Image 1 (cartoon, rainbow, N blue to C red):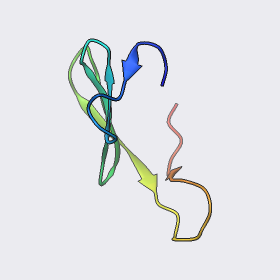
Image 2 (tube, one colour):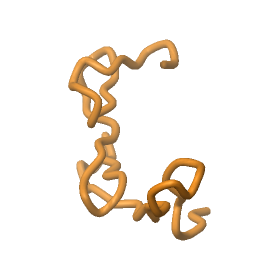
Image 3 (cartoon, helix red, strand yellow):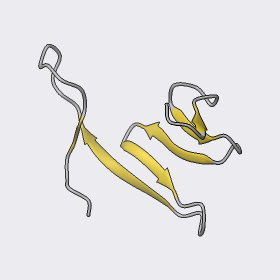
Length: 63
């Protein structure tokens, strides 16, 4: 993990060293939380079929 972040919330979460939740894995995809306004946004993921190779893929580009 990068400096300043640690996975102390478990494999399903990414938290900052201060304890603030940055992202977590939910059934719909990856849920991101804004530290300023506290709104959440879910980035959907496409699951590859079993034996299909690589990991999960982002289903849409976000810019």
